[in-house]
Length: 297
Image 1 (tube, rainbow, N blue to C red):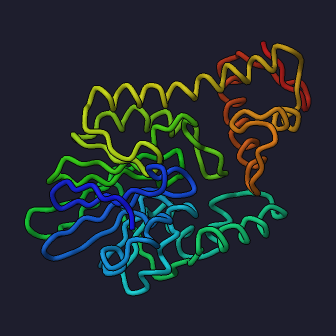
Image 2: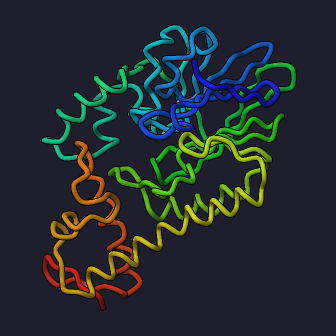
């Protein structure tokens, strides 16, 4: 069983270490007419009937660690933002969502089958920015599109409680993750500004922090989280000031993960993220490109 926090009709089942990856925090919202789960992290497999009997799963975004309980709720309806829908419906859709090289996909599939009970949902349907769900008794949920982490990443706001599930804008020390081919650094920067504008008094993250109930603390943590993006840009520039580098050389030096850390997708995530930062630096004329090499301007 997991630890549970209660805010009116909202139950938050805490994953291991407050939902530290690979686990997550499970939100369940109960209204008189509808019982809804936000995402399905690994902890969903340890909850029992409170999760297994939900009527609807609303996915804030599509990633392996947020779909790890879908196999337990075959009769529940599943919805995802239209930009992430294909990644929920099939392995081919999820492959395109990740956008990793073909040789990465077999070990990636092996990992998500083994560690995350991967189960695609071809029956999943789409929602859009601003979609609402009425659970009865005045309990209502609204989706707010906050892309960047994935193209369809959304906050799910329980308006009746002023509670915002902000997913993988997770305020961790790692910082924002935008390592997939369908991620966007520019969109993530916008979302980091927009998440502060949500009408909420309780913020729930998928990972690590779990629940924040003071706005000042939320804004402080959000600022630290957002600052990681510029710290990475400066780190990348420091490499380029030393000497020109190819993209492959920068990937080996690492921008996100420590040297030696290994999972099937790590080098792909590094390459995708570094490419986005290089594009920004080139546009700002802080870096220059000469053939295959990049250098500080």
